Length: 175
Image (cartoon, rainbow, N blue to C red; front, side):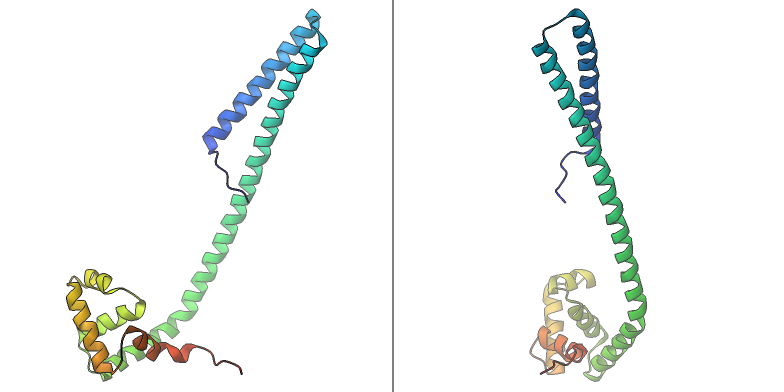
């Protein structure tokens, strides 16, 4: 759908103005016809009134279409939100189990509680700066802790840390 650049107040102002113009032209046409004004003058004024009415109908039609589109978007948004909530509910048990297994592996690697926190934040995809801000430490501390995690786990970096826990989640590729 094309983007609508006219806001609600502007739309009502234009609608009112065009309607008022159409009424004024209609009154003028009635007056002119009783006074015997030349036909070309009446035709020009009639055309102006017709254009004003066309603008009124166009704005009304556009407003109705906009309301219908908004109603459809709200329905879709509600449906998607419901689907997301259902997924979160269904996956909560799985994620809790995965979290427990990850924590157990981090303990096996001998990570300190602070390093375990950093490892979880790394797995969530946070940057070292974000981790430092969240944990109220310096970025250098977050970097040192992340290096300690990789060393204790025997991994080369963040991508290997993520792959260690997530590669088995991917479905097998059919040959």
